[in-house]
Image (cartoon, rainbow, N blue to C red; front, side, top):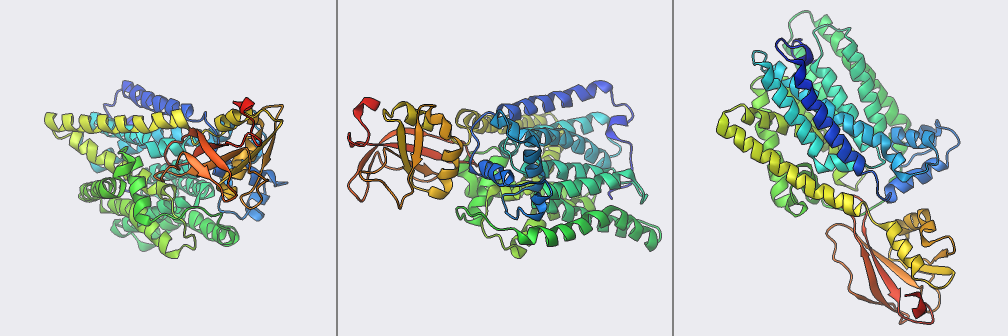
Length: 500
C-alpha cells in the first residue's frame, strides 16, 4: 500500500523498449558471477543441512520434526526434493536462482520508486535509478556470497524484494492482485528464513501510514489494510507457535554485535573487511540516514518503511530473541534493503549535474572493484579447500589406513566425514577425537581458523611428546567456512618418510 497508482515503469510514456536490454545485461552478468561461485566445497552448515534433511521420511517433517535453527524450511524442501546430487553445486541452485532474481527485482524497484517519488521526471532518470540499484545489489559481495550458498538467506532476500515491488504497485483499491503477490512473497520469505520478518514489519508500518494519509471512509481504509496484511501476519503467528519457538540453536562462535555489523557493512559496501566497525559501519549508517531524508521529503511512509526494515525490525528481533549467537548473515535483509536506499541516493547524485555524475561513476567503479576483490578470493579459495587437504593427506600417506585428528571435533568431523572419499579409493580414513588419540598420535592433525584469527605456529607439540610440523595451508574466502592448517606427524614410526 504505497503512493497513488502511477503508470508502470515498463509502460511509462516515452520509455523506449531499448531501455530494457541494459537491465537484462546487468542481471546476466551478475547471475553469471553468482553461478561461477557455486563451484567450491560445501562448508559445515550446508553439509549439516543435508545431514538433517537426510534423516527425514517425508517433506512434512521439515516443519513437524526438524526443529533446528539450521533448518531453513524452503531450502530444506529443495534439498529433500533434489535428493542425493551428482555434484555439490546443485544444492545451491535455489539460492542462485533467487539471488539472481533479486538483482532483476532491484532494478525494477529502483525504476518504480523513482517514478513514484518523481512522477514528472523523464523516463531516462528512472531507468538510470533502476540500473544503479541493479548494479549495487548485483555487485555487493555479501549478496553474491549468500546467493551461491545452500542456505535460506538468498531466498529470504529475493522474496523480500518481491514483496517490496508489490507494495510499490499497490493501488488505492483493496482487492488488487498485487496484495496476493505481497502475501505470497511474505509467506515464502518467512519459510526461507525468519529474517524476512523485517520486510513484513516495514510493510505494515508503510501500510498503516498510507491508510492514515489516504482520504475516504475509515471502513475502506481498514478493509485495505486487512487485504494486504492479514494473511502474512496470521501465517507468521501460526509459523512462530508451530515451528520457530521449538527451534534448537546449533551453536557457533560468539561475536560482538559491533563486529558483526562492521563485517556486514564492509562486505555489503564492498569495502575491505578490516575497515568494518571503524569505517564501513558509520558509512553504511550515514548513507541510510541521508537517503531516508531524501525519500522522506517526497514520501514519509516510504522512508518509514526503510527505517523500520533496516533498523527497527532487527533491533526488536534482538530484544525479543532467545538466539544469542550473532553473525552478519542474520542482518542480510538490513544490508540488502540498505543497498536500495544507497542506490536511490546515488541516483540522485547521478542526476545532479556533470561533476556529480562523474563522482557517482567513481563511487560505482570503486564499489565494483572492491566487490571484485572479495569475489576473486571466493572463486579462488571457496568456503574452504577441504577436499584438497584430504587429497594431499591420502597421496602422502603410505599406509592403507590414514589416521587424522583436529582441534574441533564438532566443526571438522562433519566436513571430514562428508569428503572422506577424497583420500582415495585405496585408503581408509580413521578419525580420532581429541580425547581418544592413538599411541604416538595420529599421522595428521588439522587446525582450523576463522576470519581474523591468529594462524598457528609452524611446529605443534602434543602433551604426549608427539611433534607435528605444518605441511600445508588451505585458505577460505570471507564470511563462511574456515582455513585448514595441515600438520604432519614427524615420528617415522607413525608416518613413514616414504609417504612424502
